[in-house]
Every structure is written in C-alpha cells, then in structure tokens.
Amino acid sequence: MASASATVSIHRTAFSPPFQFQPGWRAPLPLRCTHSERGVSFDPGSAFYRSDSAPGRDLAVLAATLHRQRRLDPSAPFLCLDVMCGSGIRALRYLAQAGADFVWANDASDALRPVVVANLSRFKLPPSHGQRRWVVSHLDASRLLAERYLRREYFDVIDVDSFGSEAEYIRAAFLSLKIGGLAYLTSTDWRSARGYGGKCSLSSYGAYIRPVPYPNEIGLRMLIGGAAREAAMLGFHIKPVFSYYASHGPIYRAMVQLCHGKEDDISNYYGFICHCKSCGQTQTFGFDELGQISCGCADRADATSITVVGPLWTGPLHDASSITEMLNLAVEWGWAYTSENGIILQKLLDTMIEESDPRLPPGYIRHDEIACRAKVNSPPLGTLISSLRKEGYAACRSHIGANAIKTNCPISSCIEIAREIRNTR
Image 1 (tube, rainbow, N blue to C red):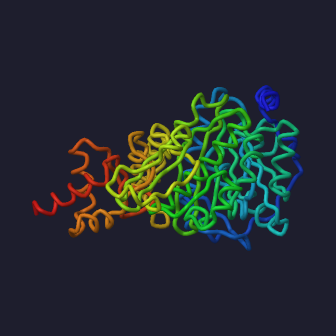
Image 2 (image 1 turned 180 degrees about the vertical axis):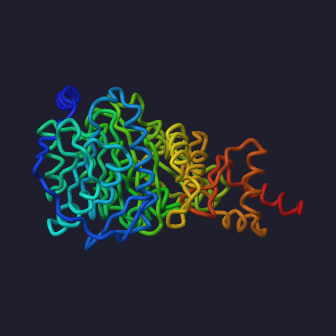
Image 3 (image 1 turned 90 degrees about the vertical axis):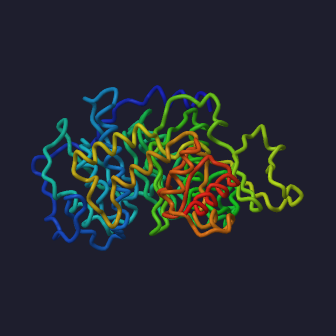
C-alpha cells in the first residue's frame, strides 16, 4: 500500500481534458427555463430534482470558489467532476458561479443526455486553454472514477451525490482527486444512521451503529469516519470543510479536503461514542480505552444502559476558518440574508461556525430532554445557552435540530442550570 500511495502522490499533476473545442460544434437548443437557483436558470426535465437541496448546492459553490482562489497554482485549470449529475444543475453552477475552467458531468442514464446537454449549453462560455468547458458522459460511477485514475486525470472538486450509501465510491473518488482537492460526499442511508442497519453500516463505513438520541449527527460522523478510514488506507488524511444535514431526505453531506500523508494520530478524531441512557451523558473513547468504557453516573450496575457506536469521526464537523470565509463570500454575493427554500445561509453558517468549537463533544442534547430530566417547563433555548456560557461552558445551537443544544457541560449541570432559570422567573 505504501508504494501505491507513493505512485498516486507523484503523478497528481494538472489534468488537461482531452476534449478539444471544435469551432463548428453546435449545442442543441436549450430547454425552456422552468427553475432557477441563485440566478442560474435551467430545466430539470425528466431528471430527479429537489429544490430543497439547493442550500447544499449553495454551500458547495461557496467552498469550491474559495478553493479555486487559494490554490497553490491559481493559474492551473480548475477542474470539477459531477459523478451523478442528474439534470446537470450542480455542474452548471460550478461553471457559472464557482469559476470552473472545465466540468465533467456524468450520469449513468443516457436518457438524460438531452436535458444535461441543453442545460449546460445555456452558458455561452468561451473555450478555456483552447478546449471545451464541459463534457457529458453516461458511465457507471465506479468505471468513470477508475478510468480517470488510470489515465492520471485528477480533479480539484469531485461531487458524488448518490442515493443510499456511497461508501463504494469514496476510495475511487479520492484516487481521482488532486492532493488538497475537495470531495463532496453524500449518504441518504438513514437506517444505518439511526441504528437500524448495524451490519450495513459496518460493511459500508466500518462502523457499528446503534440507536442514540442524536442519529442525524451520527449519520454525518459515520460518513466522515468512513472517508477518514478510506483516506488512511491510501496513505492520506482528510479535513472536513463542512458537513450538512438536510431533513428532506434525510440527506447527509460532507465536503472534505484530501491532505497528503497519514494523520500522526488519527485516534484523536476517530474513535467511539458512548451514550448512557440512564443519565443522558455522552462521552468519547479512543481505541486504547475500549476496555474502560463506562459512565460515572449512579446506575453503574446496569450495563445495558450504555450504548457504544463506532468507530467514526469524533472531531469537529466543520472548519471554522473555512465556514467564516464562506459566510463572507455569501455576504459579498448577496446570498447570505435571502431565503432559499426556507434556509437563510447567514443563520446556517453562523450556527456551523459555533458548532466548530473544538471544545464541543459529539452529539447534542434535546431541549425537551433537559426539561424532562429537570422536571421543569422548558426554559427558552437562547436563555439556556447564555446561562451555560456564563458558567464557562461551550454551548450553541445545532444546525441539525431546531430544539437541540451542543455543549460540553455535563448533563447533570445542564439540569441544575435549567432549574435555576425556572426558579428565578
């Protein structure tokens, strides 16, 4: 494996798309515009399309744009690969908004070719470096990625928007990605995230998942953890740029950066999460602590009260500096304070910045659970968070749940603070 990863690293040079621009080439007439995302008009035709997923595409465009601007060689062509493009809206937005020099849009269904080609043809972009700006193909995703790797054609951004579990594509995507490039990964495997498919999560992501009170965060950590494992096997490591949960799927998405070399101590961010049903406390444990997993609550005799899941990602879900730059760019573009399918980017990104606090452990506590354990009416969420911060704890809302709090405050102290808030009213 060491020799294989060395080969991968040595040959990660700029990819020149082998699709020469032909002056006489004529695109089909564009379809009529029926939809628009952030000013980009398109027609999904017969392709599967969800307007609810637009905020996830907003985040991808912002991250890709910033990555293009801060590359080591900004003069090199910026190349994006949309592995499962559907109507082509993601590929279209990478071209029109992220400033991609070349986009490869692929979908296994050749019946969608007229839709994808017509949508990409809307933008009369001049050829870049003497070559076409986009190409459409209809290959199986595994074959497409394998061929790119074998031909040493590497991309700056690879977007894999699959249905179900995409674990089989993670390694192939990393092999086709430039060192330092971004991979936008997806999972809609909610059964595994909620602990209903332990064998499936084990085979797909190498993690055994059981039911815990914060399944949708587990879904993100399961996906990132699987990516971290695949990267390590190839001799690399990853850094999450952002993770995003959307309830309409549910959909779990994670933008990760592929970094050179293995992490010195991956166990700092890859391990096990333990939840005690008796007291409600969540803890993390490393591989070297597997024989010591326990809870310090009074109910130590009941071993069934402890649920352990993993191994999975236990580090921050986002990179605070990257999210801050994304927010600044969204403000500059006029995206931050406008609602896109009910999501205001400024509010979402501000929450993600707070979630990036390295002091915050995995998981969250539901507002109503604190009130139930304290046997009081629920205090206002903002008041509870402010009170926790005054006591010196890290605390914030979670973008995953409207009634959830992320904090490093022990559950017993949360209960006492909730009681104090109610007693002083």
